[in-house]
Image (tube, rainbow, N blue to C red; front, top):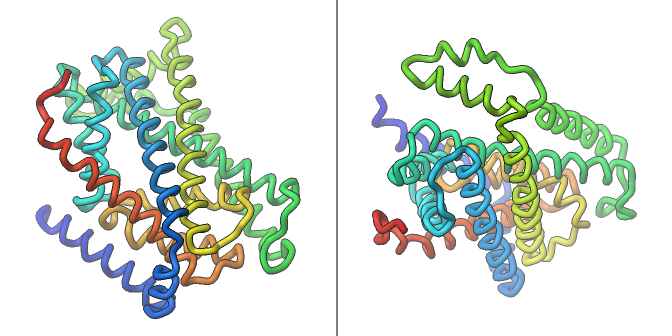
Amino acid sequence: MKGLGRPARLLGAVALLAAVVWVVGPQRLRDSLVGTDPRWFLCALALAIAANVVSALRWAFIARALDLHAPSAALLPMYARGITSNTLLPGATLSGDALRAFELSRLGNPMIESAVSVAFDRFSGLWVLCLMSCAAAALAWMGASGASLAPGALTAQHSSVLMSYGLMLIMIVMAPFLPWPVSWIRRLPGSMGPRLADLWQRLHDPASGLKRQLARSLIGSLVVQVLSALALAACARALDVQLPLVWLLAASAPIFVMAAVPIGVAGFGTRELAAVGVLGLLGVAADRAAATGLLVGLCGVLMGLMAAPLFVLRGRQP
């Protein structure tokens, strides 16, 4: 049954993407993509590359905070190979994250701690993404942006959706401050449970300084998410979708989170579905919204292809 996992996820991605194309209309979607402004798309690609470079450096910083051997020069190509795996293998970001943890362990680091560094890296980005989108949604809801929705002003329905969305993001942002069952973690099988529990206690021990170091990684996460949101905005502009940046910052969380759901390949299907739903609330036509999601996905594919030659360097770590 395990062998059916990857084909099932691949079929799921194809089915989701086909459903989006069917709802939007193949001809309308094609017309939107044909009209893409290459200058804005290249700008989006450059922003996406910059975001991933900063993200790789953030991961290296987190790994070193966990006392792992993690030189940035070694982790940059590892991160790039992870992007390629995300592009080619089913499972969205899980494929690349598993590869990153494995390659980091090959530098002489414990496997569990290597996996934890990747998990912390992922959570740092997700937490800041939700925080950024929450702040942008609050600004939009209060009218602080000075811009209204196209084609009209903020309606009561939009205001209700925006408030519910903001409350959901607040719940996610508050998650790290909730008490977690350390005793339950310690009962996990094998040596994994005790080691994870010890790491969790070390995180909350002021003398270790680990929490302060991980908090510093949030600066890198903010840079990553701003660059990623700007890449999303550039993809939208490439299709002549002109929305205030604050709205795109607010909309970025569900689009990027859905792209990371381990259903299909490289986020295709789930990302476009989220783009149609979220950007549609902002008055963007379904074909332009789906095309925006596709351009964001194409940036990821191109980065994966550019990083593919680095696989020949595997094992030649500094």
